[in-house]
Each structure stands twice: as structure tokens, then as C-alpha cells.
Length: 185
Ligand code: ADP
Image 1 (cartoon, helix red, strand yellow):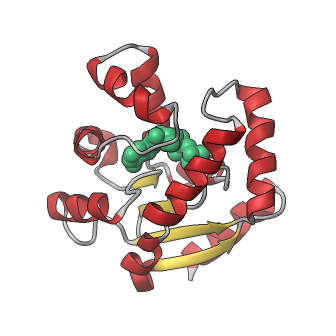
Image 2 (image 1 turned 180 degrees about the vertical axis):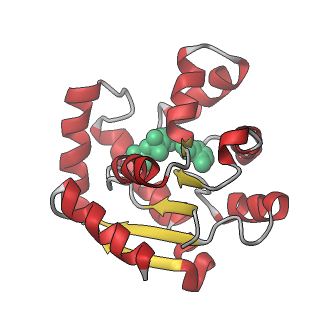
């Protein structure tokens, strides 16, 4: 089984949760561009200052900034045996840039989590209460879903036969079991 894995799914689809579990199981780092960008915003770095205006309205941060951030992260020693990517690549241009920089097999398997829209909005609004993420309000959620459909969903076709679809509805453990089963095949 390859250890260069991408999680793809709508906002609130459970990518972060499943990617973290897989990171513990496989011992390869969980690389979440959303988490990295939120850290950059919190530390008020140059990147954070630029990113925050896009994030607060639910738009994508410009590709060049995100691609450079990920390349720098993957150059660290802990990523030599693989990685679980969560939230990157998020559009076809990022996927092309990533493949040009890291090679065409930089992603071996793409796990697509399926969750219907009503459930997504409900989950994100609940998360807003729990985690206090400022981009989890209804207007931004709608915008992020729209961006997902327009920008990110085309990656399913882009990655073609590397894609494994997983039902993202159910308990965290059940979903994780489905993910592991797909990766074992
Ligand atoms: P979600 O998938 O729930 O929307 P993320 O934590 O993955 O949450 O992303 C939050 C925000 O961070 C996005 O709305 C976007 O502004 C920014 N972001 C994360 N990853 C990328 C990326 N690969 N390219 C551009 N922007 C990104």
C-alpha cells in the first residue's frame, strides 16, 4: 500500500478527523493546509496576513502561496516515507504544480469522503460552536461549499483511477474502517 495519500471531500466532510487517524495508524505526517494557514494567521506571519483575507470569506488562498508552503513542509525529514494530505491540492492548478514539483506519483491514493449537503451544513455549524472557527458561519459555509464544487470536485476526475470513494456518514470508527479497507485493496 502506498503511503502518499490525499483526502478529498467537502468542508465538514470529516477529512481532518480521518486524516489524523490515518496519520497515527501509518506513522506518516498529517499535513493539513487549513491547519497550517490558521497557524500562520494566528502568528501574524507575512503568509498569515495575506491568507486571512481570503479565509475569512471562504475563498481559496492564492495557489502560489499554498504550493510554496506545502513544498517547504514536505522537504522536512518526517515526510520521506509518505504523508496524509488534507486540503491540498484543492484545485487542478495546485495538483499540476504539485505533480510538476514532486513527481506524478506524489499522490498514490485519493480518498473521497461522501457526505450530503444538509449534513455538512449541520456539522459545520456545530463545529462553529465547539471550536470557534470564524469561517464556520452560514454565509461562509455556503461559499466554501460552492468553491468546493467548482474548484475541488474536478480533482476526482483528475486523479481518475487513483480515487477511492468512501461513505462519510456514520461513526468516526466505522468511517475509518471503510478507509482502511479501501487502502488495503
Ligand atoms: P474546510 O475544508 O472545512 O473548509 P480547511 O481547514 O481545509 O477547512 O480550509 C479552511 C480554509 O483555508 C479554506 O476555506 C481556504 O481559505 C484555506 N485553504 C486551505 N487549504 C487550501 C488550499 N490548498 N488552497 C487554498 N486555500 C486553502
